[in-house]
Image (cartoon, rainbow, N blue to C red; front, side):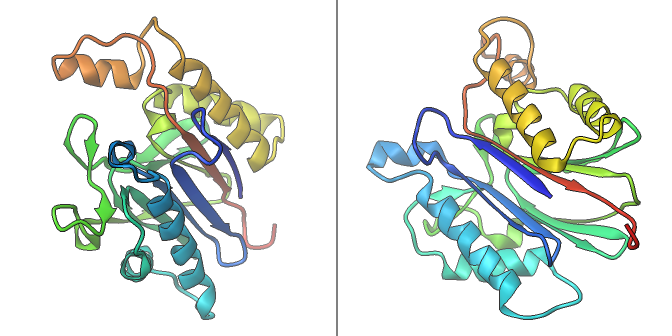
Length: 241
């Protein structure tokens, strides 16, 4: 596993993540920036949610981790003002199990091709499903739950929308394939992807996934979307690797 985080012009930013290497569980969250308009640190909820998620994973020895249960337990313990998306992924044997609320998600890349992409939960453009204490927000029961078969050599690319709004999945897969061919480690790959996303996010020309979605929603937008960027990488290895 490896990760890289680039906050957008702020010391901590609004994203949060964790890696439990021994337990083979990862999590990412993206705090909803609109809370800053109400004087709330938009990243505090995301950080607390991920801290509690990591604690839930490490509390007991398990042979199977249920991401939906992790989210529910962490949500119940999180009291900070604000809200965030959430994505928890656990490798259980030959499958990854995941639970997602909002537009943080993941790809499974196999031999240079994307073989699975997690669904995105949006109420409308720029309004993802989100967890929070406010009664009008979504709750863990809204989580999209999935089980995906994986095999040795697969690469899981998880990220917040700072990655997926700015980099097309075919480019992600090309970068992954190049990294695997050059024997780059997961931390190095995560850094490369995050910095590519950063370059595109600052662009005011050309197409990005975000510009296409914006135009489809009737808004005139060209180029990228400046945002916090989190990338977490999991290399799937054989049990005797």
